[in-house]
Length: 290
Image (cartoon, rainbow, N blue to C red; front, side, top):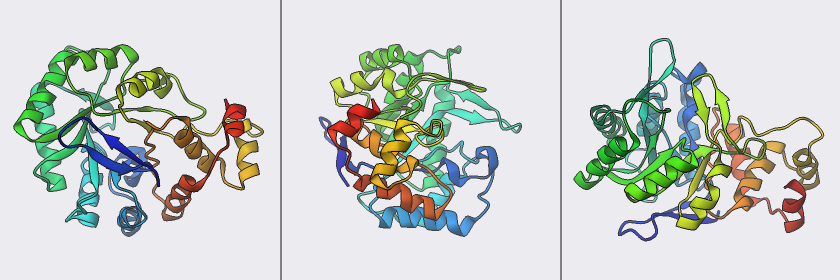
């Protein structure tokens, strides 16, 4: 796989392979509870790393705490080249709703919980997920994150689910290592969801390129596939690959700063997703898809 470097100008840059794995789908229905097939979930994590994945995305509110515990069980002690990225800023209620958990005290509690469940002394990369405009300002949230970075609990700080304006504000407040936004061939701009809006990757892509910030697309497969007969289906047939694989290949070719993290609860689908790194799209393919 190609590689990408996180925080290349820092004293502790992280270089990872450019197709990661997102763990959200390892949980039960509605991203809640234990996986339906726990042995397969553990094997997916091991196979991903054995196949060259060096970037894994998680959050303590997946499950809750389910994916962190699966990662620890499957992979600890962690390979030296593996980067585990987690998220804070949200939590789940018993009714499975998503709510902000973003006061400085909340964020500190989440970081401590991630350190404990992942069995780490320092988290290499943490995304602050923004959950709309509430009583806690972005300045206050990021201030708490940078404080924990100075304490050594966090190595690099990123932002997730951010608008263009929020990213611009974040860049003025401190070093933003990465951005994680929804992004796929078929879903590039803001999407309205029951628990709020998800800003699209295309809205911040040029800023990320300008500042050398890797953009990590999430839900890159969930909303990836447009209606039958689309351009992506046609190009996929020409390359003898699935539309999902073609979508991942499109992301990898769209910009060198993109780091897709397709998730799945199927070992077979994991292997299919990873094969997307070998697909080569021509400039003509990309122009046609655009």
